[in-house]
Length: 446
Ligand SMILES: NC(=O)c1ccc[n+]([C@@H]2O[C@H](COP(=O)([O-])OP(=O)(O)OC[C@H]3O[C@@H](n4cnc5c(N)ncnc54)[C@H](O)[C@@H]3O)[C@@H](O)[C@H]2O)c1
Image (cartoon, rainbow, N blue to C red):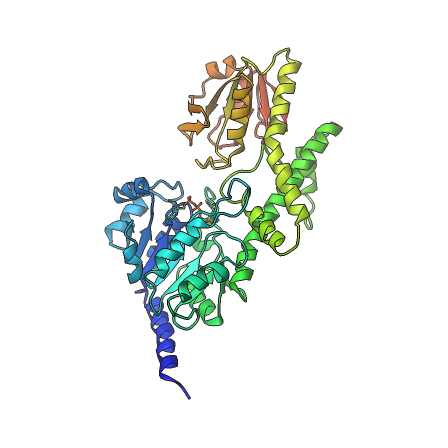
């Protein structure tokens, strides 16, 4: 027999399904950063009205002026979305009560002791819980440890008497955006979806199918959470192997880059991962710790994952050692040497310096008494500890004046021919100058 309560619950899900179908479901996106802003605009593009919720007032002011601070989002596109009334950014969390679907895209950093800091998820969850009403769907997109959606958000949402899967819907769907990658955007990156209950999964999959080309459904939120951590831990472990190969090959006097390029000719069973000065950004250096922390709580110490993170974290010191050694070979020392870092972003063609190895290398060089400067077309200024630096213009005269030029980020915008022509000593941590014509520079590869 169908009870009145069941009929009400069924109609809450049905009503939401219909709103999604008709593109009248109001989207709320909490956290308008690298993930949230493009995501909100993807739903606007698909025909949904969206409100972005942000706590950073500087960002809200910029958005109100139609200015995008995310390089993958053109200000014209932002202004177009705002002009039609399809998108607005707000600091007023009361509007959450008016949303049909809410996507959480807040940061998930590590604490000083390298433990997950999910305080922003908790803060966003509280804002939602205070205004939650039947028929609303909430999806967590922030990368986090397995169990967060079920153990942290579900109890918050049920504390007021609502039942997840019956009255409200809750799921996890990892964000996979790759800032600076022109080949994939939010709409074209397949979306993994796992709900707390089958109804939650169904509602979430329906929502994403309306805006994203491909949706892949998994059996639970925990599986979806762990999928994201596997993807980024895979990167960390393989980059760690690339980095260890670089250190090992240096000891053996073998060119690691040539080895990797040769191995990459194998058409199966090998995927090239390259060494570098260290890993950066908000994902690869952090996410493996989310996974190993949760494993430790459950009695398992992840060994390979921790070791890879350790090797990756040691790379700035390895680069520092190379700089010291090559200066020494030239009869110079780091103290008072003029050293130019090329690129301080953590990866090419973006402005993001979060966790960038350049920051640690810069600080070490400064502490050892070098006169350090940097040039990065994407990063006009940089605050590192006690140092505040502005990007310098890369000219032949500047390159000539340097005792050592260190390539940290292989931005496309750099003229590598000019660099090897005018610099006398180059430490190339990215293999960026390989095969570049011209040049008097002595180039040392990682
Ligand atoms: N950046 C990436 O390439 C990437 C890729 C995939 C997944 N992720 C994951 O997505 C999440 C977000 O990352 P991001 O790079 O967009 O971070 P971000 O720092 O660029 O943006 C997060 C935004 O959330 C805002 N915020 C913080 N607390 C808030 C709150 N309580 N309410 C509303 N807004 C709040 C911040 O002010 C900021 O603008 C993280 O979990 C990250 O690991 C990031």
